[in-house]
Image 1 (cartoon, rainbow, N blue to C red):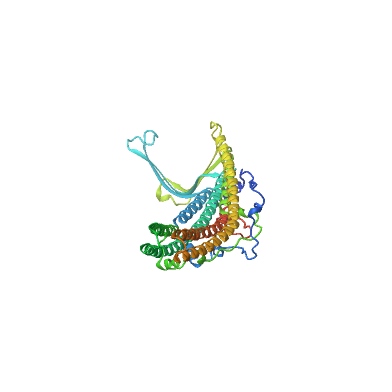
Image 2 (spheres, rainbow, N blue to C red; image 1 turned 90 degrees about the horizontal axis):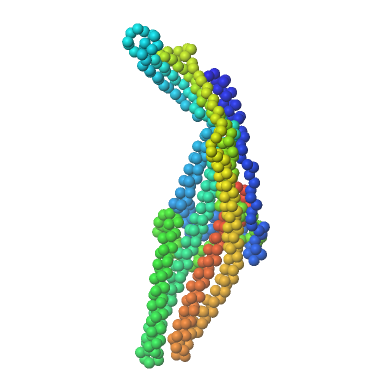
Amino acid sequence: MRPSVTISTVSMVLALTGCTMIPTYHRPPSPIAKSWPSSVLGSNNTEAVSLTNWRDFYRDPVLQDLIEMALVNNRDLQIAQHQVEAASAQFDIENAALFPTLNGTAGANVQKMNSHIWSLSQSDSPFYMRQYAVGFGISAYEVDLWGRIRSASRASFDRYLADQLGRESMQLSIIAGVSTAMLNWVANNQALAITQHVLENRQHTYALVKQTASVGTGTQLDVAEAEAALHDAETNLQIYTRQREQTLNQLELLVGTPLTSKMRDELDHKASLEDVVPFPDVPEGLPSDIIARRPDILSAEQALKSSNDDIGAARAEFFPKIQITAANGTASNNITRLFQSGMGAWNVAPQITLPLFDAGRLTAQLHQAKAHKREEIARYEKTVQTAFREVADALSGRSTYLAQLHAQTALVNAGQKQYQLALARFEGGYDPYLATLVAQRTLYTAQLGAITTKLQQMSNTITLYKTLGGGWKDIAATPKMSIANKIL
């Protein structure tokens, strides 16, 4: 085969692979309202910032260090990254089918024949036929005239994008998980400190009640109540100690590695949720279509595009397949003359295959591809609806948690005054111990409630950041992947 023939043939083949039967893609309309419910609109805070990076939101230095460790060591994130790499390699495999595979070949064929059969000799000695060949060739290259291979390649590329966006969605979840776990640890640490303080007070009170009972100014009922309150505080102390250790274990699992002693010391300095650098506020008037930038929604759309591409591949199966096998090299019956002048040899073997009867297999494959697309449309719409609900819930929680926290703080202040007055009246001999115990329990419950409410308020802000796709900056376009330039 002359080089000019080879070049022109390959050029013609590539020119024939320019079309596909992929249906025109139309993004399904979002099945959500055009605006958020009026009760969950953004705040009027003029200091609300536009976020471009997770560091703009998670501004606490300790939390930033934990997140950085998680982004490097979290095993779920590593699994997702390896899945993305596998999807990228699968696209390379599918895309490679668009090009001929050139193989170098070398072979020998030696055959023993009976000389009488060919009337070559009257002797009984055997006759050997020998053939030697060296060259290169293309084996069963499919000309993608109808775009079957191209459709499969694009479907694989869209699946890669879906996996890549799925990894970004998982990264958002892991960052939020690390942040929530640290807040839980701080909240348990704060509750443990309050419980320890309550236990010390009850130990002092128990000793005081026993003393008053021994001199006749108190009763054994007061002693029993003080002892019960003491043991209740001891029980709560163990509960919060256990919960603090368990949240630390959860944090280390999310981070993916044991915390260093330095990191533990930095955590120990977080004695209260107030010690955590607050998160920025959400701006006013968020449009509902801001959720279109969420990685899980973008991933669902890429999966939908992939199913749309599969329809093109299924359609192309109904048309003839053209395969080309070609070779070019030298051949001789004498290995010493293999590379001499005049020993060149070539062959071209095109083949056309047209499906005539397959008992409905190709039709069923097309129906399956269309049904899968309808499934992906429904899944995409459900993802959008779920995202809208999650953001609406988080926006609703934002305003209500702030009001609840304000009320809870007022309750703690009132409980503190009540307890101080009740304790003074008990120590002055005006009231029995029961009134003091009730006031102390009210204050303790209010303090724990304030911690819980503050934790819920901060966790809700984290959830809002995550459900908005990583912030509330202007709606971003679908991220461009560097692999896109591989597509012809």
